[in-house]
Image 1 (cartoon, rainbow, N blue to C red):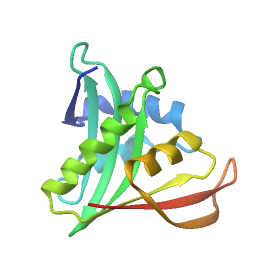
Image 2: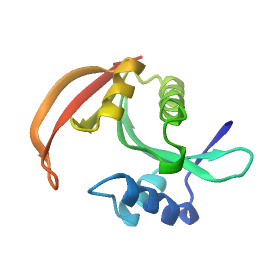
Image 3: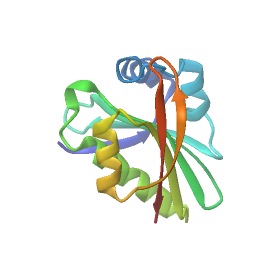
Image 4: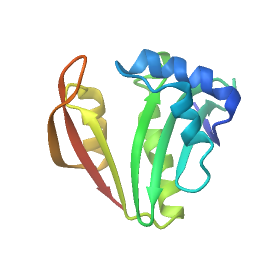
Length: 149
């Protein structure tokens, strides 16, 4: 599948929110998503679309300042998982960061999200810490990861 990336627009938010609800026990609100999509200075919300069908297949939210960035959200629509799209999103984030001279990318993930933990490690992220019982419903630790570019 060939994927196109574009900055999220207001009309994308409902579909992004539906993926949020299906992906996370504590999904972001539409207003929180719009805060990222509408901030041109230090945040971005980017959609990934199947080039052929135009269907939204995933997205990411990134905040950045100076030479550091944090992946706030990264998600792939359930029916498109296990097809390399998570890695594709990470590659796009890395390109975005390199264009802005960002040296480090941070993220945190639930320790029980084994697929994501494996993806981040295989992409070169290094575990740099843990936050005990950081997540609620269900309770879980957060693993902190850092990628040096």
